[in-house]
Image (cartoon, rainbow, N blue to C red; front, side, top):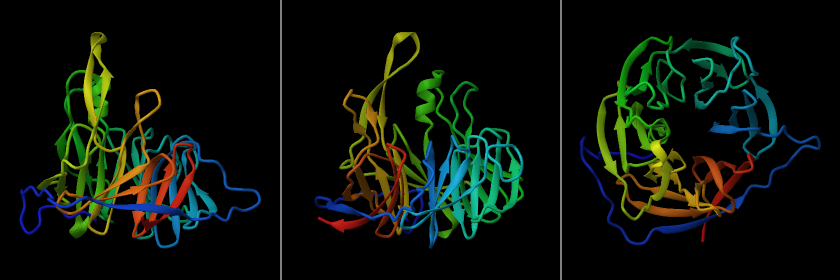
Length: 322
């Protein structure tokens, strides 16, 4: 995973390196049973362990479980309000033998085992957008403020029983809910030492590192060799504002950050792209990875990339040098 603030805190590191390396991928051939896996309706998050891949499906209100070669195995959960049931879940994390789910419309966080057995859960005062388990007794839950209620905290720390511990990171607030919603789209990723990373989705290049108590430890600016994309967002009174899209999705693994680069669509809009940028621990653009399809979600484990494409299919790739 990406390490920030090497040796001391509150420092900014910019990588001054030669041209980034270039990689391609080889797709893992999926052995599909005769009856085939159930289609993914709206996959919004990925997690994995040593033997399986877990795909959170918001519209189906469940978690679909696959082998690491892409063979469908079983489903966890269903729509509802009871234990182990979900309603428009939006975030997923895995730690040990447990899956942590941001059960958004039910305004709660739930914990189940990898076979679907209910373990615990607790309610929160907001709609949880993402969840990150730093340990069994330390969870980070992220909201997605629209700006309608003014400025609020984005990060919320809880213990394993759901007791609130801390709040951190103010949301962006400009009194325009559409613009604010896009500005407040952040990602949280696990880092070494029980710490975590806060990665901007738009209008920012600073990767923040925080500890398990929500304290800011340092920031690293991503190299200017990684280019963000600009798009005009319609706001109030028929006006437009420029938004700089930083990444469509991201993942971390082995001291590296992987950014899914937004790309222009045929109609001039911005969408998910076919390039993954690899950012080193100092913020430098270390490499780019070319993939054959536009991807919306990624998770990285060594040379294996688990992903969801724009047609909501699970795609698994192995990294190769060009």
